[in-house]
Amino acid sequence: MSVVWKAFRVIGILFVVATVVILIGASLEDSRTLKQKKWSSLGNFVCATSSSLLLVTGLSTWPSSLFAHERGEAVAHCGDCGKCSTRQDIDIYAKTRNTLTSKSKTCALRSLWGGPEAVRDCFKKKVGFTPGCNTCWTENVMCDRRFCVFTCLKSILLGESNNRGEDKLSNCLLCDERMCGPAFIKCAGANRRRCGITSDIGRDDQNELCQTIDVGWATGLN
Image 1 (tube, helix red, strand yellow):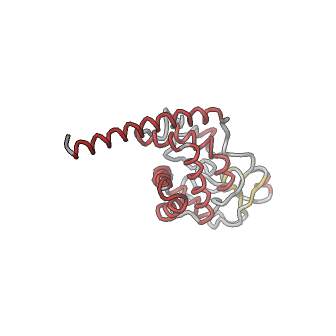
Image 2: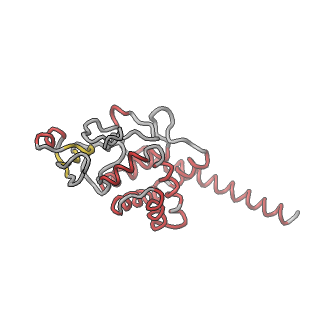
Image 3: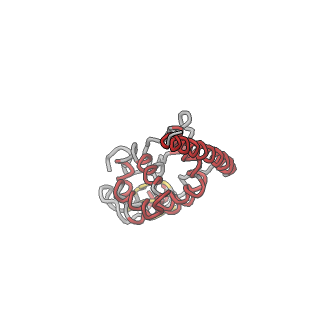
């Protein structure tokens, strides 16, 4: 048996073992994910501003859109304000609506060998979030690595899309949303759904996208 053949055999065995580990790990993670209750990221509050719609600054959280409107505030997104509730970050959400998910997956893979610093640097170079928002996305990736790593590696291995059906999330995105979503949204404040921005992830637009926005993030009128 040649040295080359032996090397290929070892590589083949390692690939099979790694695949089995990923499949078993994914099964365990999927089971844990399904035990987590579904939640809505929209929230009961709104993040609004009293400044010109073309110069969105001074964002603050209000109990409802009606409450904000009565005080002359314009709703920037559903839910509480957070570190991503900035003009720069929400503009990025709008401009990368169809590419942000794939860029995030690329940055997430870097966590496997580079840790959080590699992820933070990746988001800085490939996306351009503000430092605070970058931190929220980096922490979310590290949460995914803790709870969803095998599920998402399986997704990559099988070449799965973002959705299983029209608006049913892939197991990887479902794990991210249920296991890490609450902490992320508390940190970030704004995400694409809260800003009413459709993306490359299929959603139930009527129930999962904010419908009370006064700033035109979704239509490019901001």
